[in-house]
Length: 323
Image (tube, rainbow, N blue to C red; front, side, top):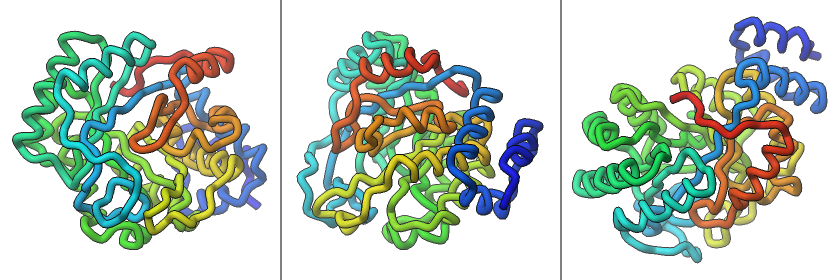
């Protein structure tokens, strides 16, 4: 059995754990694992908590066949279908979030990538947000290139979101209309444009613990410091609609092991958090220190007011990370 205290002490001292150590850690007793993960979080991140919100800026009819997604044109679901929202609509939502104390706001669009014309429209929206609010703007526009990212950065974007979703090994079981390498290429293009990157995955797709660990190790290799950890919410009409939901203990273990692998990252509870009976509280004591608040893309979330009250009670301070 692995020595949690010794391995945690090594991480606190600056050591990067190996794949074999992470695999052994995954089977460690849960409570000691989570306590040490929380200690690592406090050491590297103190009491900071990055709380963000998202807007579904373009919904449905996506050309990609990601097996978990309600917006894929390959499946028949209840997801809304509408084109790119206007700059005014996107800015109005940003203002509402800013008034609630949210510091980071992400515009998310369906599809493999936005066209050059759509990118220009979104640049206009970002400029308007930056002129009229103090909120930081993130974008999730698919597999863009460096030139497109540079235009968005010039407009005022600070961060790009692009989930890897799972490990390289398991990815072809989840999506075949684009590749893992295309995702990594887009992440590196964003980094080359001097943008920070937010990238993580979805747990409960049918992956193994080793797949989860390999995802975290890839994110470490890419230098990603904002890592969304989603829990699959099986959507009727998608191929994964009958997958069993993960539980609180599963998510605590995943978050804790991610913290050992990514000690100074913002580990962000994202989609599916509302399915947890405690809305993520136990994960915030197991290494997680960020979250998406409000509604998700196609499912309801937890209100900003509720989240802020919980975080204040737990002694967290809402502030921007890694900018």
